[in-house]
Picture 1 (cartoon, protein in one colour):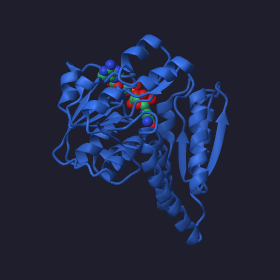
Picture 2 (picture 1 turned 60 degrees about the vertical axis):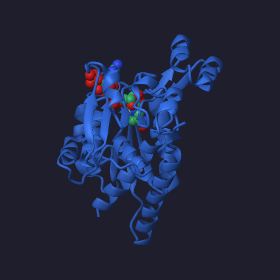
Picture 3 (picture 1 turned 120 degrees about the horizontal axis):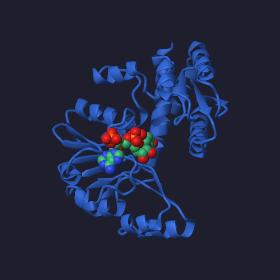
Picture 4 (picture 1 turned 135 degrees about the horizontal axis):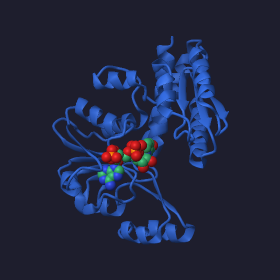
Length: 304
Ligand code: NDP
């Protein structure tokens, strides 16, 4: 049976470090770091994420400032708000919650955020610094995954790592961070041929695709470490019966509540083959917020 890599416990450790950093600033007479969150429209999941971020800020003493805009907001209004936040010396970090409603250009918004306040680490300047292996604000999810792996003592040097997914926010930066730590990295995606064989080569498998239960137990090399970034809501009972065959409790929840959250990896099957696995929920999700607050503290420090 694999070890469960407890993301919640590691997030608590990361948040405690941030809290101590905030305390230290205050002891030096500096104000608390401030994170501005821009939420456009009514996407229910985004509202939940923003609420969770505000609660985490309160826990560590970071000031959280929320800016809500209507779903029919024009790009110029959003751009003007970002310009104001860029110029505001009381704001250290800016986060535009994605996805933006139709009609708004998320790339334009993200590229407009000052790189020094880009706590999501999505600005091309910060992505370029990562590519060059230089310090900068790095994307929260892969940074937090790396922190979790380091905490569990996984030696990445020389390891075969496969990253499933090539998005700018998870897959690509994750691959770069693993490469920086001297892993041999393969990036797989929707056009990869014979995905199961590619995955089976991995000593470390990171799944970030957004496809519930895509990765079967038979795709995992015995003893591999599996990091499941995917967060998927499953409502389809037939799908649930297929992907939760080795995870009866998930199936029970699906039947009882009509929906259940799961990752890209079939957790029950992975537990029988891998040496360590992150669960969903309670794995990478809590880590991402902790990474965001760590970046906010860093951005505040850089502003001094
Ligand atoms: P994207 O949709 O931007 O990217 C998905 C990637 O997966 C793409 O590269 C795509 O390939 C690839 N892909 C899709 N389907 C398949 C398939 N059948 N086989 C192989 N590859 C496939 O997603 P994100 O990177 O933004 O997010 C991925 C998942 O991680 C989602 O479930 C998301 O909710 C979750 N997430 C979780 C976070 C957390 O805090 N835990 C934070 C961020 C994301 P191609 O490029 O060829 O289209």
